[in-house]
Length: 127
Image (cartoon, rainbow, N blue to C red):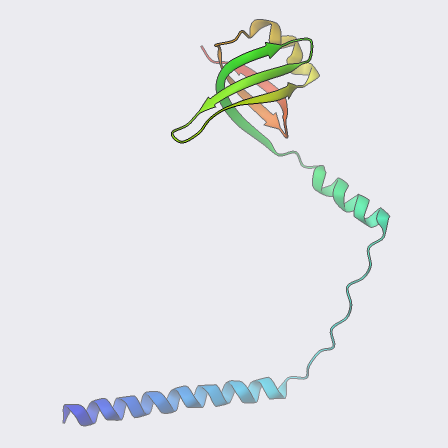
């Protein structure tokens, strides 16, 4: 009796799957196909405007580390960062506003910096 029930359920399942497949095939045939249109060619002005729109929003990140070197003349700061699997020194440019604060920073100081690209936009010395 149990085997007959299993066979009966398998037959019902098979018919339901076949019915759904046929319904999907019929639905696909009823829809008219659309002709694809070529993408419009962008002019140089449109490309420039698109780039300006993308670059208008700054991507500012916060980073921290130990100051490896400070060069006030070249307006650069070398920042040493350490993680479990990486150890590196990054040389970053400093904005005009932050360049005034470089006289207070010495190698070995712990700092937090806010970076836009490779330019430091803000600098905080950690106590």
